[in-house]
Amino acid sequence: MEKSAEHIVVNDKVIMLKMDKGLDSEEHKHFGACGGNITAFNGTLISPNYPHYYPPNTNCVWRIMVPDPNFQFRIQFPTLKLEGVQPDCEKDWISVNGIRYCGEHDRTVVVPSASSTLTVKFHTDASVSSVGFRAEYSSFNPAGECQGMHTCGDGRCELMSNKCDGWVHCKDRSDELNCVCTSDQFRCQNNMCKPLIWVCDGVDDCEDMSDEANCDCAAGFFACHRNSCMPISALCDGNIDCPHGMDEADCEKIDVNCTTNTYKCADGKCIVKPNAECDKVQDCLDLSDELDCDCGNQLAIRRRIVNGNDAVIGEWPWQVSLHFATLGHTCGATLINNWWLLSASHCFQNAESYRYSDRQLWTVYIGMHSLTFTDSGIERRLIKRMIIHEQFDNITMDYDIALLELSAPVRYTSYIQPVCLPSPLHVFPANQRCYVTGWGLLQEGGRLPVILQKGEVRIINQTTCNNFMGNILTSRMLCAGYLTGEVDACEGDSGGPLVCEELSGKWFQAGIVSWGQGCGRYGHPGVYTRITKFREWIHRNIGIDGNT
Image 1: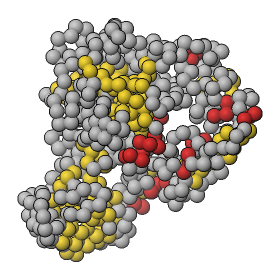
Image 2 (image 1 turned 90 degrees about the vertical axis):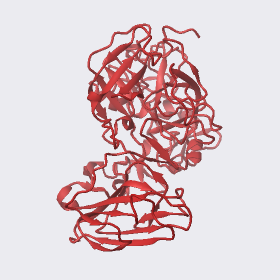
Image 3 (image 1 turned 135 degrees about the vertical axis):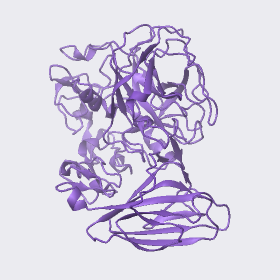
Image 4 (image 1 turned 120 degrees about the vertical axis):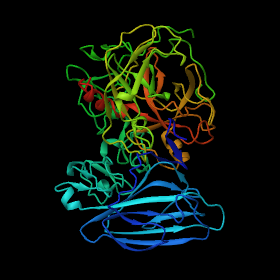
């Protein structure tokens, strides 16, 4: 189950709600008939008897062709409720160009198609039936809509500079397919190209682990990149021998070549020490690594999340409650300075009945401990500006991050404090103790708590988690919790913080509650947006130099 109202995960695949556009009277409609040949630019298909239950032992085939062969189709399912379980779909299913879909998807499923024809098949067995489906197909001219740009399978246009850059911009990944890797890129086993500096960095960027394979070296050597090994003597010798600078990490050296994985001081010099910021050790010569460190402080503590505990007033002073219209608490957020909050993009995706994207319908409560509004010192704000990450994917939940600008700044108190944001090089090692907080359900299908809940979780190795989750995690996600279940975030915790305490006593935000299957289930820990991947994006959007 996904972790916010109107958001779920079905059979390990996240499906998001969108507004139901209804039926256009100008569209070509194909109702009632079970299959057939259709020639049209756009139209609608429904299962037999829709919106009532479809009959058993049914097989329908629609073959749809656009009149102009220069056009391509895309198809979406505002309603898709079939008996069966992904990915096998052995009972009832609908297939689009050979790919099957089944189960109860309460949110719009979008299926791209890079051709001028569609073959849609619908099959039901002799047992239980369900509501069925309603599909809307439309066509577009990729040459006309995306001149000089790359056309994704769903018709979206992407800059040619985004093609083959190692980052997936199209939902069908077409911008990263059939690429010729450059000299500074690594070819994954799945033939995708990724920057060399991502090889053997401990993160599965290829999403098939090929960039992290064969990184072990013989005694006296260490892994550098592309399966190459360097002698131990090259470690901490003042020279960066590996593209990502890992041979000079943990050396407390300064004035090294700046890379995407170094910490840049205000004077432009770089250090390769991980977790250098706000650790009460002055690493930069200009002392800039210890500036702007008035964050991550628990000023008013006395030392339910699923299987969590009541938080003490002031224990998590950066925790924010987001209330939507008349629904009350809907999502969480984190205070990162006196003007800005960090939350999850999926909290602000429209549903059939609610316009979550309308900033004027949200109310922000900072310094809250009890949802009964009995606490003193609660600050109420509206949202002045809402920034959803431009690459957010509501199917895979990749880039699930959002910034919220407050209508007026807040004043810091013992109960209102910002969290510290980690640098891109900050390391949150596997098994590190962290905390997830929020007012989400106390158990799957249970009730919302009144008091803010806290739950201790552990960072889980990315490879291990990906194996449990079916290899659907991206490098911008991280897992935390326990593979045996137990403590986990749940519905209503979305957008809230996963925070970890460093030796300095400062609390850094490692993740944003994003998605998961159920709450506290065995083998399905919580999945969070990885903050270290978004430090530059955050600073760029709130007007701070991304290098500091």
